[in-house]
Image 1 (cartoon, chains in turn brown, cyan):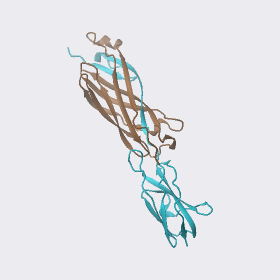
Image 2 (cartoon, chains in turn cyan, purple):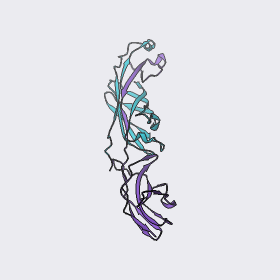
Image 3 (cartoon, chains in turn cyan, purple):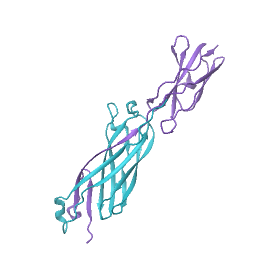
Image 4 (cartoon, helix red, strand yellow):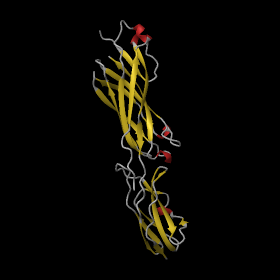
Length: 135
Length: 133
Protein backbone atom coordinates (compact mmCIF):
# COMPACT_ATOMS: atom_id res chain seq x y z
CA UNK A 1 0.00 0.00 0.00
CA UNK A 2 1.09 3.59 0.24
CA UNK A 3 4.43 4.61 1.48
CA UNK A 4 4.97 7.24 4.10
CA UNK A 5 5.77 10.56 2.59
CA UNK A 6 8.45 12.80 3.88
CA UNK A 7 6.41 14.99 6.13
CA UNK A 8 7.90 18.41 6.37
CA UNK A 9 10.67 20.22 4.68
CA UNK A 10 11.87 23.48 5.99
CA UNK A 11 13.20 26.41 4.15
CA UNK A 12 15.57 28.74 5.83
CA UNK A 13 17.11 31.96 4.83
CA UNK A 14 19.73 33.78 6.74
CA UNK A 15 20.50 37.15 5.39
CA UNK A 16 23.77 38.75 6.23
CA UNK A 17 23.04 42.38 5.77
CA UNK A 18 25.84 44.71 4.93
CA UNK A 19 25.79 48.42 5.46
CA UNK A 20 27.00 49.85 2.21
CA UNK A 21 27.53 53.04 0.42
CA UNK A 22 23.82 53.61 0.32
CA UNK A 23 24.18 54.95 3.81
CA UNK A 24 25.80 57.98 2.35
CA UNK A 25 22.44 59.63 1.95
CA UNK A 26 21.42 59.22 5.57
CA UNK A 27 22.03 61.80 8.25
CA UNK A 28 24.12 59.50 10.38
CA UNK A 29 25.24 55.94 10.85
CA UNK A 30 22.43 53.53 11.44
CA UNK A 31 23.02 50.38 13.44
CA UNK A 32 23.75 47.93 10.69
CA UNK A 33 21.44 44.91 10.76
CA UNK A 34 23.41 41.71 11.00
CA UNK A 35 20.82 39.38 9.56
CA UNK A 36 17.42 37.88 9.84
CA UNK A 37 15.79 34.51 9.35
CA UNK A 38 12.80 33.33 7.37
CA UNK A 39 11.64 29.75 7.76
CA UNK A 40 8.85 27.96 5.99
CA UNK A 41 7.60 24.54 5.09
CA UNK A 42 5.05 22.82 2.93
CA UNK A 43 4.19 19.21 2.26
CA UNK A 44 1.44 17.14 0.68
CA UNK A 45 1.79 18.33 -2.90
CA UNK A 46 0.09 16.32 -5.63
CA UNK A 47 -1.12 17.04 -9.17
CA UNK A 48 -3.94 19.55 -9.20
CA UNK A 49 -3.57 20.12 -5.47
CA UNK A 50 -2.98 23.17 -3.34
CA UNK A 51 -1.23 23.68 -0.04
CA UNK A 52 -0.08 26.53 2.12
CA UNK A 53 3.53 27.33 2.74
CA UNK A 54 3.84 29.03 6.12
CA UNK A 55 6.81 31.34 6.07
CA UNK A 56 7.86 32.73 9.42
CA UNK A 57 9.63 36.08 9.34
CA UNK A 58 11.63 36.82 12.46
CA UNK A 59 12.62 40.37 13.29
CA UNK A 60 15.78 40.39 15.40
CA UNK A 61 15.93 44.18 15.59
CA UNK A 62 14.70 46.73 18.03
CA UNK A 63 12.68 48.45 15.38
CA UNK A 64 9.52 47.58 13.54
CA UNK A 65 10.07 45.49 10.42
CA UNK A 66 7.65 46.07 7.60
CA UNK A 67 7.75 43.28 5.03
CA UNK A 68 6.51 44.26 1.60
CA UNK A 69 7.02 41.06 -0.35
CA UNK A 70 8.15 37.48 -0.06
CA UNK A 71 8.73 35.35 -3.11
CA UNK A 72 9.98 31.80 -3.49
CA UNK A 73 11.96 30.29 -6.33
CA UNK A 74 11.45 26.55 -6.74
CA UNK A 75 14.38 24.50 -7.93
CA UNK A 76 14.32 21.14 -9.61
CA UNK A 77 14.01 18.13 -7.37
CA UNK A 78 15.59 15.47 -9.56
CA UNK A 79 16.07 14.60 -13.24
CA UNK A 80 12.73 14.84 -14.97
CA UNK A 81 11.23 16.86 -12.14
CA UNK A 82 12.02 20.53 -12.59
CA UNK A 83 10.95 23.42 -10.41
CA UNK A 84 8.22 24.29 -12.91
CA UNK A 85 6.20 21.47 -11.40
CA UNK A 86 5.47 23.63 -8.38
CA UNK A 87 4.12 27.15 -8.34
CA UNK A 88 4.38 29.36 -5.26
CA UNK A 89 2.37 32.54 -5.26
CA UNK A 90 4.28 35.49 -3.81
CA UNK A 91 3.21 37.46 -0.79
CA UNK A 92 2.64 41.09 -1.52
CA UNK A 93 1.16 43.59 0.82
CA UNK A 94 2.30 44.67 4.22
CA UNK A 95 3.33 42.50 7.08
CA UNK A 96 4.38 44.24 10.28
CA UNK A 97 6.77 42.33 12.48
CA UNK A 98 7.23 43.88 15.91
CA UNK A 99 10.74 44.23 17.31
CA UNK A 100 12.25 40.89 18.26
CA UNK A 101 9.10 39.03 17.31
CA UNK A 102 7.99 36.78 14.48
CA UNK A 103 5.06 36.73 12.13
CA UNK A 104 3.81 34.20 9.59
CA UNK A 105 2.85 34.77 5.99
CA UNK A 106 1.00 32.09 4.05
CA UNK A 107 1.98 31.49 0.47
CA UNK A 108 -0.30 29.50 -1.80
CA UNK A 109 1.49 26.55 -3.37
CA UNK A 110 0.04 24.72 -6.36
CA UNK A 111 1.14 21.69 -8.29
CA UNK A 112 -0.23 21.59 -11.85
CA UNK A 113 -2.26 18.64 -13.01
CA UNK A 114 0.48 17.95 -15.52
CA UNK A 115 3.16 17.49 -12.88
CA UNK A 116 5.70 14.93 -14.05
CA UNK A 117 5.50 11.37 -12.68
CA UNK A 118 9.14 11.74 -11.64
CA UNK A 119 7.94 14.23 -9.03
CA UNK A 120 6.22 11.58 -6.92
CA UNK A 121 7.70 11.77 -3.46
CA UNK A 122 10.11 14.49 -4.53
CA UNK A 123 11.46 17.29 -2.36
CA UNK A 124 11.92 20.63 -4.09
CA UNK A 125 14.62 23.00 -2.88
CA UNK A 126 13.31 26.50 -2.30
CA UNK A 127 14.99 29.88 -2.34
CA UNK A 128 13.29 32.83 -0.76
CA UNK A 129 13.44 36.45 -1.76
CA UNK A 130 11.73 39.37 -0.26
CA UNK A 131 11.77 42.96 0.67
CA UNK A 132 11.12 44.90 3.81
CA UNK A 133 11.74 48.09 5.66
CA UNK A 134 12.94 48.80 9.16
CA UNK A 135 11.19 51.73 10.77
CA UNK B 1 15.32 60.29 15.52
CA UNK B 2 13.15 58.10 13.45
CA UNK B 3 14.70 57.10 10.25
CA UNK B 4 13.61 54.48 7.86
CA UNK B 5 16.04 51.89 6.73
CA UNK B 6 15.21 49.63 3.90
CA UNK B 7 16.28 46.03 4.01
CA UNK B 8 16.53 44.10 0.85
CA UNK B 9 16.25 40.36 1.13
CA UNK B 10 17.86 38.63 -1.78
CA UNK B 11 19.62 40.17 -4.69
CA UNK B 12 17.68 43.34 -5.02
CA UNK B 13 18.50 46.72 -6.33
CA UNK B 14 19.27 49.27 -3.70
CA UNK B 15 16.62 51.68 -2.69
CA UNK B 16 17.13 55.35 -3.25
CA UNK B 17 19.98 56.84 -1.27
CA UNK B 18 17.53 58.86 0.76
CA UNK B 19 16.02 55.66 2.07
CA UNK B 20 19.31 54.60 3.63
CA UNK B 21 19.25 51.13 2.20
CA UNK B 22 21.13 47.96 2.95
CA UNK B 23 21.50 45.26 0.40
CA UNK B 24 21.79 41.60 1.20
CA UNK B 25 23.13 38.52 -0.49
CA UNK B 26 20.92 35.79 0.84
CA UNK B 27 21.48 32.07 0.79
CA UNK B 28 19.49 29.25 2.23
CA UNK B 29 17.98 25.90 1.52
CA UNK B 30 14.75 24.13 2.14
CA UNK B 31 12.05 22.33 0.27
CA UNK B 32 8.51 21.46 -0.58
CA UNK B 33 7.54 17.81 -0.30
CA UNK B 34 5.39 16.04 -2.86
CA UNK B 35 3.21 13.09 -2.07
CA UNK B 36 3.75 9.52 -3.09
CA UNK B 37 1.08 7.43 -4.84
CA UNK B 38 -0.62 4.52 -3.10
CA UNK B 39 -1.13 1.15 -4.70
CA UNK B 40 -4.59 0.23 -5.89
CA UNK B 41 -6.94 -1.89 -3.84
CA UNK B 42 -7.97 -5.21 -5.35
CA UNK B 43 -11.37 -4.75 -6.99
CA UNK B 44 -14.39 -6.96 -6.89
CA UNK B 45 -16.27 -7.89 -10.04
CA UNK B 46 -19.61 -9.52 -10.72
CA UNK B 47 -21.28 -10.37 -14.02
CA UNK B 48 -24.85 -10.65 -15.22
CA UNK B 49 -24.79 -11.94 -18.77
CA UNK B 50 -22.51 -9.45 -20.57
CA UNK B 51 -22.70 -6.71 -17.97
CA UNK B 52 -19.90 -6.54 -15.39
CA UNK B 53 -19.96 -4.37 -12.30
CA UNK B 54 -16.54 -3.50 -10.91
CA UNK B 55 -16.16 -2.04 -7.43
CA UNK B 56 -13.11 -1.06 -5.41
CA UNK B 57 -12.17 0.66 -2.18
CA UNK B 58 -11.01 4.24 -2.38
CA UNK B 59 -7.35 5.14 -1.98
CA UNK B 60 -5.88 8.06 -0.13
CA UNK B 61 -2.56 9.81 -0.34
CA UNK B 62 -0.36 9.60 2.75
CA UNK B 63 -1.98 12.14 5.01
CA UNK B 64 -5.55 11.22 4.13
CA UNK B 65 -6.49 13.18 1.02
CA UNK B 66 -8.45 10.97 -1.39
CA UNK B 67 -6.86 10.04 -4.69
CA UNK B 68 -8.84 11.81 -7.43
CA UNK B 69 -9.11 9.01 -9.97
CA UNK B 70 -8.64 5.40 -10.95
CA UNK B 71 -7.72 3.53 -14.09
CA UNK B 72 -9.51 0.22 -14.70
CA UNK B 73 -8.01 -2.59 -16.75
CA UNK B 74 -9.43 -5.96 -17.81
CA UNK B 75 -7.44 -9.11 -18.52
CA UNK B 76 -8.39 -12.45 -19.98
CA UNK B 77 -8.17 -14.82 -17.07
CA UNK B 78 -6.61 -17.61 -19.11
CA UNK B 79 -4.25 -15.80 -21.46
CA UNK B 80 -3.64 -12.63 -19.42
CA UNK B 81 -4.12 -10.65 -22.62
CA UNK B 82 -5.56 -7.25 -21.85
CA UNK B 83 -8.96 -6.43 -23.27
CA UNK B 84 -10.26 -3.03 -24.22
CA UNK B 85 -12.29 -1.65 -21.37
CA UNK B 86 -15.62 -0.30 -22.57
CA UNK B 87 -16.83 3.25 -22.22
CA UNK B 88 -18.39 3.27 -18.78
CA UNK B 89 -15.17 1.98 -17.20
CA UNK B 90 -12.59 3.50 -19.52
CA UNK B 91 -10.39 6.48 -18.85
CA UNK B 92 -9.88 7.95 -15.41
CA UNK B 93 -12.82 7.18 -13.15
CA UNK B 94 -13.50 9.47 -10.20
CA UNK B 95 -15.80 7.08 -8.35
CA UNK B 96 -15.26 3.65 -6.83
CA UNK B 97 -17.38 1.58 -9.17
CA UNK B 98 -18.27 1.28 -12.81
CA UNK B 99 -20.51 -0.89 -14.95
CA UNK B 100 -19.20 -2.30 -18.18
CA UNK B 101 -21.89 -3.43 -20.62
CA UNK B 102 -21.41 -5.57 -23.69
CA UNK B 103 -18.31 -7.31 -22.41
CA UNK B 104 -17.14 -10.04 -24.79
CA UNK B 105 -17.77 -13.57 -23.70
CA UNK B 106 -14.98 -15.08 -21.68
CA UNK B 107 -13.44 -15.16 -18.25
CA UNK B 108 -12.07 -11.83 -17.09
CA UNK B 109 -10.19 -10.28 -14.21
CA UNK B 110 -9.94 -6.58 -13.37
CA UNK B 111 -7.33 -4.34 -11.81
CA UNK B 112 -7.38 -0.81 -10.39
CA UNK B 113 -4.59 1.77 -10.63
CA UNK B 114 -4.82 5.03 -8.66
CA UNK B 115 -4.34 8.14 -10.81
CA UNK B 116 -3.67 11.79 -10.13
CA UNK B 117 -2.94 13.86 -13.21
CA UNK B 118 -0.32 11.83 -15.02
CA UNK B 119 0.83 10.18 -11.80
CA UNK B 120 0.01 6.51 -11.36
CA UNK B 121 0.15 4.30 -8.33
CA UNK B 122 0.96 0.63 -8.45
CA UNK B 123 -1.62 -1.53 -10.10
CA UNK B 124 -3.73 -3.65 -7.76
CA UNK B 125 -3.83 -7.40 -7.75
CA UNK B 126 -6.34 -8.88 -10.13
CA UNK B 127 -9.91 -9.46 -9.05
CA UNK B 128 -11.40 -12.88 -8.87
CA UNK B 129 -12.46 -14.13 -12.28
CA UNK B 130 -15.89 -13.34 -13.66
CA UNK B 131 -17.51 -15.36 -16.41
CA UNK B 132 -19.26 -13.43 -19.15
CA UNK B 133 -21.71 -15.34 -21.31
